[in-house]
Length: 283
Figure 1: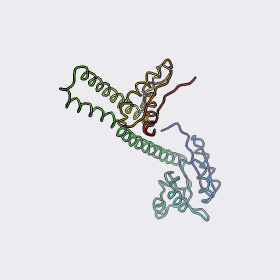
Figure 2: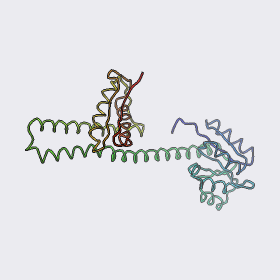
Figure 3: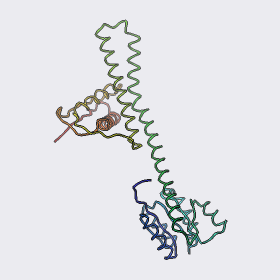
Figure 4: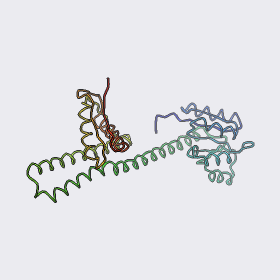
């Protein structure tokens, strides 16, 4: 599932029940927190990173149903899975527990293997759900970056090929060669940009390869500056590479390119007209 050590909050007004559950879960490698009443549980959950809650139903003053309902109504605790601990076997109580947001229940006195199995299952589901949310967020961000970062270079290619189509018969050989060369460079840089975006997407899903090597940072920045300069459109911003030409770094090529390209792209976006973006290095 994961190497993370999960924290289970046990809430019960009977100390012996807490001790019994805590001993079982502690031996299985879980971190344990506990509360002896509903009010204390609601306070404590704000100060610990509980991954799962074992919650007694029958408690004085604030019962388990009330605690569960309040936790599920709070965005900060709504995603914590809650398993009810109950000595009751009545159908209505079990159904009510699911209605207020519990994911499961265990009847006391509980069996060690059953407790561990249910806790493990719901922690696995919680972890999988968190991973799914992260992947969905990464996907949304990836599409957003594609829409933003690829629009300008493709506009450059479209405008360049349109100009070539309309005026190639009026251009001399030197001008024609220069235009074709610029389009080739733009196509190459757009392809590299797409590769970097795909590498970034891999990194978000944990599938990226890491191959550090000695790199000339000046040359990498220079390529990024040239690409960015072509994509400025009509914005009056100057980009300067003032990094030491002999400066080397030990890094993964794709990763460092992605970082520097994003830095330059954001700098272009937020620099006012007439401003200067400068890459510099220091000892």
